[in-house]
Amino acid sequence: MHFFITQYSPKLIKKLGIILILLMACGCNDDARSRLNSLKQGEIILPSGKSMRVYVAKSPIEQLKGLSNVTMDFFKDSDSMLFPGYEYKLRQFWMPETHFNLDIVFLTKDFYVLDVHRNLQSFPDKEPKSKIPKSKMVRAWHVLELKSSSELAKEIVPGISLKWKGPNDLLQKE
Image (cartoon, rainbow, N blue to C red; front, top):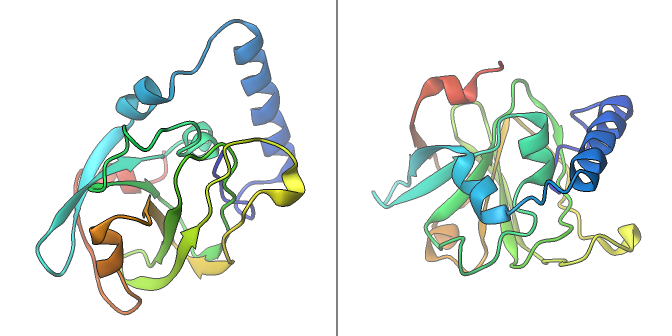
């Protein structure tokens, strides 16, 4: 469950939590692989010319689930997940139910890299909440997650610009 801790009101988070509990109670078992495949996709080009596939977590529910329960064998080193923003705000991510360490990349609206939180530890459980790793807080527009072990992750450093190649409507508020 990744989400912008500071982007949504506690009331909205509570409502989303209730919806998720109801879906699970109905026997609607969320398969992480099919959930990830159902997301819209784009591409990011690094200054080196290398590219990565980008899964876009656009809706509040998609952002809440993020990379939860996605296994390392399914999420490739050339994959990433974008959490598009719609304004500059303090952003922070937490990492329950993750199965591999992540680099969290904080971006401007135009994909300039502001900061990178390296090697945020995976946490395969939901509890105890006090032990769930959290990223640092950074004022940013978008946030990108990718495997810490990825060679592409090592190329992303503050001060470079990434190039978005994908439908621009994926970056706009619905």
